[in-house]
Amino acid sequence: MNRNLFDADHDSFRAIACKFVEREVVPRLTEWDAERLIGRETWRAAGTQGLLGLLIPEAFGGPGVEDYRFRYVFTEELTRVGATSLSAGFALQDDIAIPYLVDLGTDEQKTRWLPGMATGDVIGAIAMTEPGAGSDLQGIRTTAVRDGGDYIVNGAKTFITNGIHADLVIVVARTDPDAGSSGISLIVVERDAPGFTRGRKLDKLGLHGQDTAELFFDDVRVPANNVLGTIGGGFVHLMERLPRERLSIAVQAVGAARAAIAWTLEYTLQRTRSANPSPRSRTPNSNWPPP
Image (cartoon, rainbow, N blue to C red; front, side):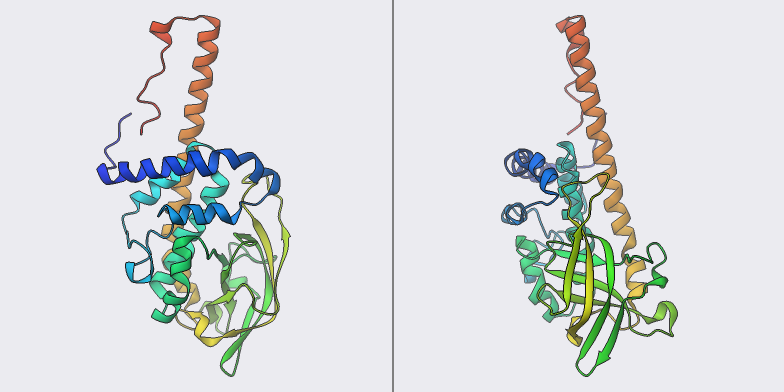
């Protein structure tokens, strides 16, 4: 199977991504699974190589690359070696958190947060799911109540990807209890905000190295200028950006499936050659998996 999806620029980017994966990722896979956490040094190494924050405009420290095929290439190189935990964390950063900030943030917010996200020094998360609300976001109970120039955030979130490491969390909160879906807003809570704490680093059936956490907000005072987008517009903001999130999940799934097929083929050919060596007939197809 030959693909014509990529051009020479993507191939050059793949070479950089491949070297990063072999040097920074492969030797640490077992450690990450055991620790259930990926070290921040790996995020910074990816940022140094220009592999993070591709969508961030040049004015805010990124390359301003809108061609999603570059993200596809990096995801494919990570899933090729089974680094799905890292792929999920990077995807949360580049395909979810950063697009929200690029699309909805003010210049002040972008200047404050995006440069660090491009270098891997700032890790982002988005907090939607709650103990009693998941797929039905209209059922969320986390609240953000206006108090002068601030909002007071109270509530709990769970199953939050990058939750342990996150330096900023886009919190989905109810700002008007009587407005239904029009009463939901997005508010960015930063790491050191008093009253913001992290609970368990959750065990999971898969993605063991990916930190997934509970988050708690107890009278967390957040400046009003940390509101992302429009007050009451949070539900619409979420729906508008779900397609990119779904695309990201699909790319990771395809990459993982391709890797599984390649590993199976390699294993089968090795067993076949061991049972009945025949170099002429047992040479693996060098075009699989495709580049």
